[in-house]
Length: 171
Image 1 (tube, rainbow, N blue to C red):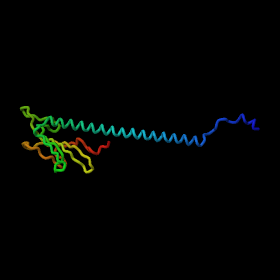
Image 2: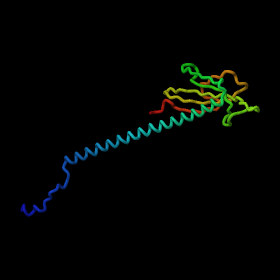
Image 3: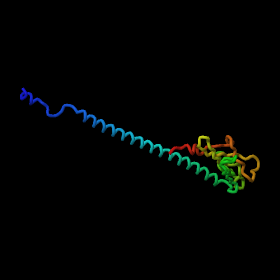
């Protein structure tokens, strides 16, 4: 009988052995872990690139506004307060001829008419972050020879946060 059924016997195996299944599973698991690690690395690089771009964009805007303010001021009026432990936050104050959103105000002789003060102050938060705030304060009466101290509470006048959460940005 053995001779008669020998022709119907298969010479190739019908299923995989246990060792073959374990090896294939191990290879698939390693490849999956490599793929997940690769995608995590790509995501982290993307987040860092986006953060760097956003900070660069904010810094460019702040420098543009500051440069414009310094171009429109009397340089003798620029005052810098840099004592971080004192009662005044680190800040810069200068006289301006700018009117809120209306450009430079000139008198009838074409000379700038100083309409107020521009103040930049660096406010630090308890969480460790900091914000750069620009305040345009209109003048009342004659402009004094010395710049006023930047206020430390909520900003009066026309305020704009130029840079926010400086130290909170993650790299």
